[in-house]
Image (tube, rainbow, N blue to C red; front, side, top):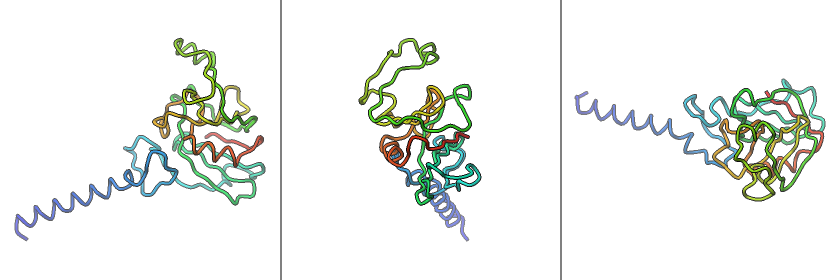
Length: 196
């Protein structure tokens, strides 16, 4: 092969490889719950993995439904009580290990149009934050919130879609508003939750 053809073949290979590597990022939109392709470790959003899981390694049953929150992959998995429905949603997770709580809990309350008050520790870290934010587009809890049995912890929506797929919360698990609305309808008070 001539040197000119060799250079052309090499350029074609490099251009094709770059296209293949970029394809997964192109296939995923900001509010998508679907993922096509393989996320590499250099991607910061859902960097670890974003794949379907089976409920059995995590729960003894799916009575009342089951939610698994994987902090590493920044994903929330939902199984209905009869296991006929499975959903996988991208999430925001706590910004640091100090704010992260892991273990078993459950949904204790569901609220449409939640209001928000910063916790005492949030207020200490951010004294300029307001003491109260009512329901609406400025509310950090988005359109729906599900309280957990752990004080101050919620699974909730967010109006700031840049947070999803990132370490960006003060302890809660955040979802796109359309995803929390779907999860809210499927879940019930008593749904078991495991955060790993």
